[in-house]
Length: 403
Ligand code: KDG
Ligand code: MG
Image (cartoon, rainbow, N blue to C red; front, side):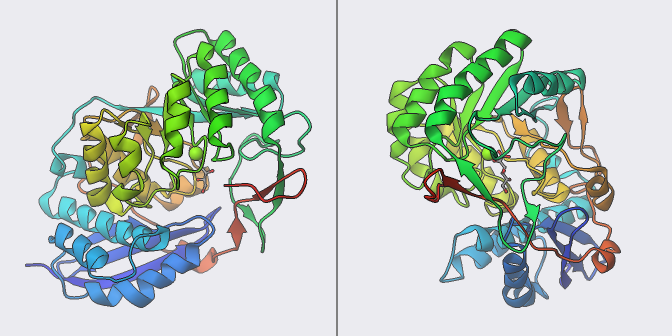
């Protein structure tokens, strides 16, 4: 039996902050995990260094499920993004080690390929509709068939997810979060027409998605869902905060626009009511933030029972390691729907060499043993953590609005 010999927590900022877990075994196998929690990177690094690393030393890395249960059920204070990202990083590192030990890519260990590729969606944004149409065209020209469309709101100087630059990074480097404006009434008055313009521009074959970032009340969300029905959205995402899972019933009862939620969920229980009542169509939980491959696999299997599809979160703040884990899991998941691929700057691709890739708008896991991804540790030295936060939004009277 092999044993875990070393656990390193590597915090580095090659363009943006990432928390990477490196698990080394006595046989010299290395497993990589991602524990990045955007804006709370040091908290999860401390959780791993100060409370988890010691627990892993000497243990059999092949007992993936038992170690998951040990780190989850064996701790009185459980759940939440920090705990679950820490467990998620350990879990993906152990699957990586198992793959390397057996010479198999992780998707083979999870039951093997159930499709030839994962439909990926990209982001397109434009302050004006004409800029948005150009951005959509660029994604289609790159071979993608699904695009998330976000646009400016007349009267607001800033809108989350809509940059005036060609690319945007959600977290801005600053000691405290920037403050943006928000006005749900202005948004509701303008966004359906922008989505309609995109649909008219691209015709019927392209999948269009839109993200409301939890900003609406349930009745506003219901109204938006009805308003965009003629434009055949693939989904409307995060229309209202899901702490109150029953709130989605109201949205569901009023619109046939498909609903997606869950990128901030950490366990299957966060989505239990939503899924078992069939209030949503897509569950967005990420391998890193919801306890790793082992737990998200259960969540997706639970969703499958109710006809809900898996559609993982894939922004730039999830490192290419967790992205690899997600691509492997979805390659072997029957009820997969679509995968977000926000994309990374070249610097991040180089920091995390990876076998996963995109071909013709579809994600492929590659065939290297394990997760097929690693991290260039030499970057830790010259690229230290830099405080960076998502912006905070306030409505026009100064009231803080939901993320
Ligand atoms: O950390 C927050 C980002 O990941 C968030 O902006 C991404 O809403 C998001 C999405 O759908 O990718
Ligand atoms: Mg989102």
